[in-house]
Image (cartoon, rainbow, N blue to C red):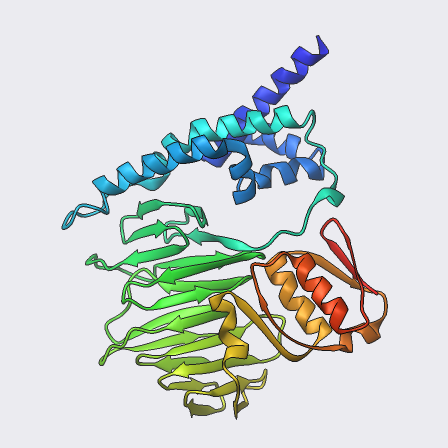
Amino acid sequence: MVKEERMMINREIENLIVKALFKEITDDEQRQLDEWLNVSESNRIFFERLHSEGYLKGAIGDRNRELREESWKRLERRTVGEKGRKIRLFVLRVAAMLALPLLVVGIMWYMSEHDRVDLPLANQEIKVGGSKAVVTLSTGEQLSLFGDTTVCVNDGLATLVNTKDTLNFMKGDHPVVGNSYNVIQIPRGGEYIVRLEDGTTVYLNSESELRIPVHFGKDERLVWLTGEAYFSVKHEKDRKFVVRTNKADIAVLGTEFGVRVYLGEDELLTTLVKGSVEVKSDHDIHRIVPGEQATVDNMGKIEVREVNVDEFVAWKSGRVVFVNARLEDIMDELQRWYDFNVFYSSPELKELRFTMDIMKYKEVSEIFELMEKIKKVSFSVNGNNVILK
């Protein structure tokens, strides 16, 4: 009797979760779901895991993944694959039709694997980062993208096509009235590639945000960045490309360069690989050449120096390079990619220096072992917490 009652409750929650994920939930149902979410932090963790790539892999299984991919391939052949035909696919409706049965199966699988959803936080593991992003469309609609997501979206103003780990903004001929933007956010442990309508490619690092207009203007191509990105800008003679940040603007016609401007850091770094860029703050302006890096401080002062560019842009090619770097700075960087918490047994440890060139897709334990061999430091891992001694 007790078992039957619990199954009824589980089925009810399954129902509410599915409706919430596809935005078909009523106000009364949302209140019921909120009550369940507020019962414990574990319930919220469970709900959030339904959006994660790792959960979906376990939930739907290899066979369902093949079926899903084949369904998307058939859709692509009918939309993107037909030359000269406009894509008119309202993705949320179609995605729901394809994903709903798999999601329900996934929830049932999860609940059958765990008698209850009260999962201890200590069981979280440190996982290698991967391709994932959240896109907020100009309409306010949000999409969660992963490295295996294939999707086409037409929001009435522009067409977006995502295949594998790249989000493509298709060139459109719709007139845009007012300010309409799409926003790409990369969470901790994430990265993504964005190809803009002009052919410019942007590699976005963890904890970054790129805001772009639905269509570029006639005189310039302007985007807004927080975090870190590598730009390979398509050359256009008549329209410069401008990256706007909270510290300075970086203007180019066609080039390749890296920009790092995290909110918690004191300086903006612009590292030039090819071409030339102009860095302009409220109080200063400098043009730099390949092999140079411009730093902009909080007062708008710009300084230029020669650097080994690989040290600053290798991340977009799957490597992380540290040259005589402080341990605290290294751990801050690793935290963004592997999404863990770090604690120091003494403040002196933060000042240890390391030089390393590592593959960013390695298990973090391998990196810790390497650092232990280089210096007298030890790493103790408990769930997703790392203690340095």
